[in-house]
Amino acid sequence: MNQKIATVPVDTEVNRQARERALGAVSWPLNLVAATVGYQSHGHLLAIGDSASLLEVLERARGLEQGLEQGLEQGLASITLVVTDVPDDALLQRAEAADVQLQPLLASQLGRLHLEGYLGHFSAWLDGHEGPIELARALLGREHHDLVLDLTPTPRLPLELPPPGYFHAPVAGEARTTLIDGLGDYIGEFEKPRYFEVHADRCAHSTRGFGGCTRCLEVCPADAIKSVPGRIDARIEIDPYLCQGVGSCTSACPTGAIEFRQPHSLRQQDTLLAWLDHYHAAGGQSAVLRFVQADHAQHLQPDAAGHVIDVALEDLGSAGVDHWLSAIAAGACEVRIQAYSDMPDRLVAHLEDQLAQGRAILEALGHDPGRLQWFSDEEQESSLALPRHAGLTPRLRSLEQAQVFGSDKNTPSATVQMAGGRPGNTGATDGAEAPGKRERLTLVLDHLAATGHVDGERHPMPPGSPFGGIEVNAGACTLCMGCVASCPTGALGAGGDTPRLDFREADCVQCGLCSKSCPESAIRLSPGFLASAERSQWRVCHEDEPFHCIVCGSAFANTRTIAAIQQKLANHAYFSGDQARRLEMCQDCRVKDVWHEMATNPEAQLKL
Image (cartoon, rainbow, N blue to C red; front, side):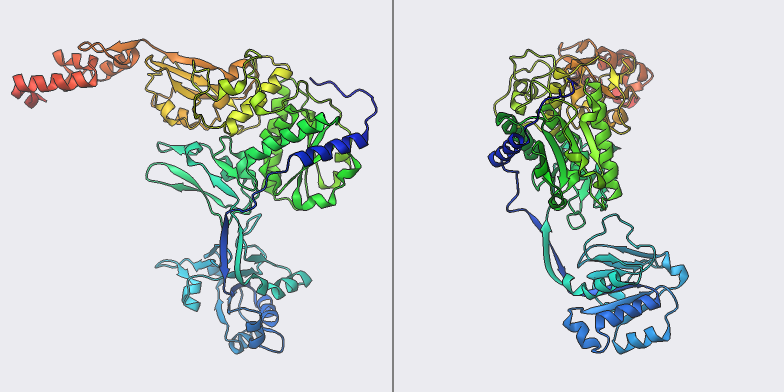
């Protein structure tokens, strides 16, 4: 389980050949024809700054000697200057000679200047007493600016990853000069991949007017993800023009509602298992998977260590705890995340949180949390070292061969877990959907539990982790099943013909929608990872005897619900006296009884 590698010779050449065989046998999945989004920029520049900075913009963008004609050759259709101080004479003269729109701002107006958008579609406006004043419309007679050059000390768009077409250059110097000279490169038509796909039916963000999971909103360094209020529910929307494909939203999403498309995250997971399977089949030993940023991978030296298999990702944030733990289960001795320079702070925080979650789960399942490691940009050489741990045995060769923890070893987990997720259903159904992100993670965790040591206890997890259970107050619960209707993952289930509330902890992502939607406040979240086979099994949270209609005998509610209704409506005129028995009738029989009374005693309804 956590045994250290014995001091035995490691044949680096054999490992290198095994690695090449594994990489040659299974190609890393790529989208050769990806969906794209397009930008169109006509060269209308909005520049914001003080007089000295804006004068430099005019000198560089329009040419020091050729004047306006040089600017047009560079492709700039217009320049709008927003001056944050009192414009000096040199700027005014140059702007007038070049026929440039100039808008001075008072100190009181700076705080009312707003900016949003992306390449070819920037909106800048001032809050006015009679509504916003759109600068592009007021000064140019068009809807948008195409480019924004922000020369102020504090960026107008304070984002870790600003949108395409926005440039912040507060300090004069060579870097700013080069930037201004290259503005013409951002004029024309451009395309970029649509990095994501959203499955709204899996999203745990909102239901029935209650807010739930917000993990994707918290990790996007480009602020491309928004919660959009609807008539009742809010929904998650990702702006494809702002999204820059960091991928942290996909690894943070516990339900798989947001999936990375370049390549598909589930195909990545399958490829990792296949690589490790081929590596070991070729005689490779002491396998280490190192997750690296693709555009930084060329600076690494994996050939110096045959046991290191580099997983070069387009974006490091697109892989998270589910990928890392899959690799450990498949026989990787260790998983190493190789950081790179200039990583966005929110991406670093997200990966550190994922790392903390993975280590907590490994420890809860009886494995050394040191199997997951983080290496800074300065520690690239250290990330090539031999692992301190041996690979787990038996290895998880594919998710189809995984075993449900606590089940019979001859029963494939795929036939147990993919069968619709309700108690009593132990066989796969025809046409059943392929397992999603959460189901696949559960299979991996079950394998890690079977190869480790579990104590049956609930272990603490980092705040906000999507692992935990619920506690139901049986005295308050009326089995109205509002929580079942609100649960986005199917972790809660009704008992069919029996008034019963069932729960499967492996599917619970701790979104809190069940607790918020419970009219009796009978549900409380219980965060933490349960290291027990019970985590993957259905358990009964609360059940009651069915209540049968006094007329037709059909079961239509449970006894506790009827008792609660009788108590609350005891003084209601419609259910007083002999009419109180209607509360013990099903819906059809109640309607028939009302119509029968109206037919035999028409004046009865006047008493209400």
